[in-house]
Image (tube, rainbow, N blue to C red; front, top):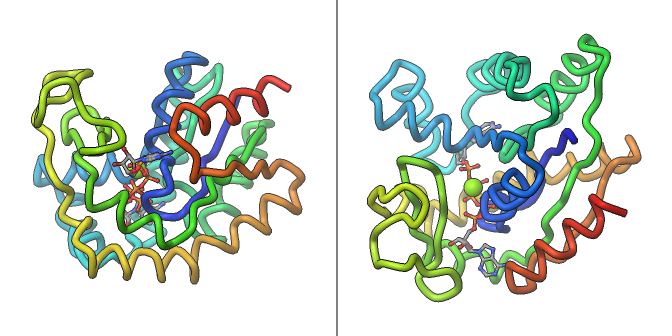
Length: 214
Ligand code: AP5
Ligand code: MG
């Protein structure tokens, strides 16, 4: 099962992707998590990516695409994978389609988690993230068992640098300009599935699994 997640920043891509990955036993590959891990480890890639991420801008395609194309060829991806936050531009999507075709393969589903912009800012302001394993929480909607500590790995929970309201607004406008066109791209390919992401997260997950298992 090869899946990509589409949706605005804060729509719940990461939250759903982690649950889907667990249910179907496939790896969850988040480009945002990969960049944040590189920033934490102060790698060259991390230093370059941080400049863009802190401004709410996309990291250039050339720093992103090769990384994903090589990741999906690792052995744990043979049964499938879920891509969260990639592709985010038409050139990234075209590159992924070409790379998959070169492997005699294709993406099975593009899940578009649809949430109105008004709800996004509220979700982001309450988000807490684990920089160790990538799990996300929300102080009201999805609190961890113990405040400030990740349920999955015991890591510390932080507010992401790019969750300040002015950066969130910039990320939303970048989303509409550069990423939203992917909805049409995957619709034309016949693999788009729209999910109402405004519902409580368990209801969203039920809707997702219903579609995947139909
Ligand atoms: P990335 O980490 O991918 O951020 P994003 O797309 O902005 O998405 P988020 O992670 O902010 O939101 P999400 O949809 O995962 O929501 P979540 O599940 O956490 O990318 C960060 C940056 O990296 C980019 O800005 C860019 O610079 C760079 N980058 C990454 N990939 C790139 C690429 N391919 N090309 C170029 N640059 C790239 O949920 C949000 C909150 O809401 C949480 O608190 C959660 O608990 C809560 N929540 C979730 N679902 C629900 C629900 N149903 N009801 C109520 N609350 C909910
Ligand atoms: Mg995310």
